[in-house]
Image (tube, rainbow, N blue to C red):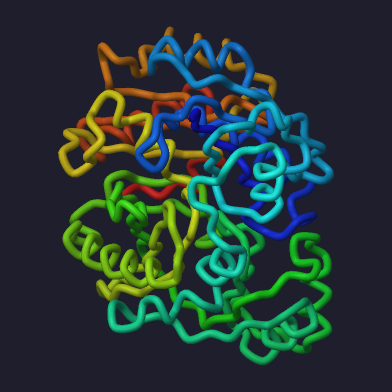
Length: 413
């Protein structure tokens, strides 16, 4: 039985929320799953994407990382980004299917086509594991969490913001920090908060978690697989304004948090998630303050935005990142000076500048997300974090903008 992977990043949040510029970014980011080679211990035979990565990007991956699975493109509508509506049953028939996140619409589509989901988590399990109002119980006795309260719908969320600001507001079901807001000054009335939320279409009908502001210096995490109960990799997130995910450092540096501590916390979460009936990949996101206090920040019951980094680098440096003799910095939203730069032109620029990493010289820049609307994804590999940072700065000098420097988070400035 063949194994099929469906890149349904759109299903992380609520249907209808991913529109406009966010939809365009999701379409671009979906291409990073072409680095995936296996899932749940099975080789991937076919990958279904909601956007065409382009033949130049596919040729680049094949030349540097070996043969790809069969690539199928589901022609989705960016104004209603929902890949489960656009799947050809032939792609799924008699196949074992995995996805970025389990979704009941996708499960129904697979079953109608005569395929089967690899994990088939029940919708209520997926919601409970991923809901920002439920993760704190899973951290109990492991690390501290920030007290917070969930509001259902814009009216309740606005009332909580008005009552608690200054505060940090997170969308209860979303990924990558999409929709998150920081209110650093008091909000005079619920009406003012409501107007601010209604101005952002992402918040239409959404639940939100309102918490005190906790200024975290670092956000490390660990990913694992539940079912085979394996730790996969560790990472340190790079975020924009402390809200939106931009990229990561990998592995998580020991100066921030010991890998043994990450494995201990991750192992306990594996056991607790297993008791809920959840199966598949998940990750734990933590926060570390300037004084070294560790907080449980969230749990994601899905593949995370770091997996492609581990997959790409592991081709050349091994799948156990604890044994890597390198440091890795990844940026999913690298701003391009020339917004019209094509994949071929970008690769040529990197090659001519001697920055492009390859199997024979596995240090330098990997193109992880093809350019789209002035943004691209890059992975920078150095023999240590200082060298990875120098490569980032050299890349920015070559093709980047000041936005990359403003959003940058050097490991230890």
